[in-house]
Length: 171
Image 1 (cartoon, rainbow, N blue to C red):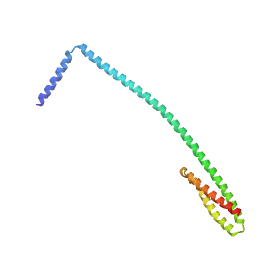
Image 2 (image 1 turned 30 degrees about the vertical axis):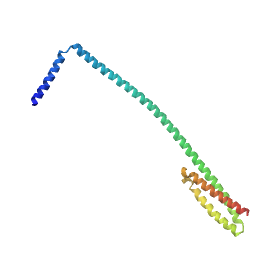
Image 3 (image 1 turned 120 degrees about the vertical axis):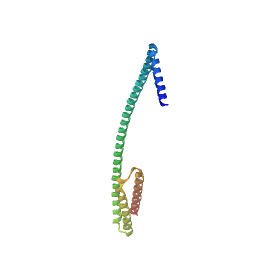
Image 4 (image 1 turned 180 degrees about the vertical axis):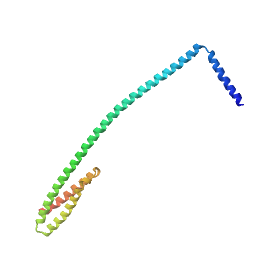
């Protein structure tokens, strides 16, 4: 059975090859020209695709360069903003230290009064003043998200202490 199949395939191949030899050379040439034209069209299409992709790559590279420039600009602005924040915090710290010094002077004035209640109040104010000073020492540890709450707390403590000290000095 195998031999029959092999023989049939061989006969088919020989007959097709024989047909080609007897074929009109003009038809064969037309068929070859058509095949070459199709291949040429394919090459042209592929060349256009390559050119298009090269243009896209150039455009993407231009956009990438622009985006990288934008990132560098934003990084510079971030650095400047961080520097401004550090300077603003330092100014706040110095202003708070000045308020502490003023509060110390008021507490000393209160301690200089001869009454026991004034000395007792001065001692209480000094304890609370020291708590504010400790809090101020942690100013560098404050993250941006907590800064407003930190500042508000310190300002409120100062306001209360200063008000109590002034009221005590007036009485």
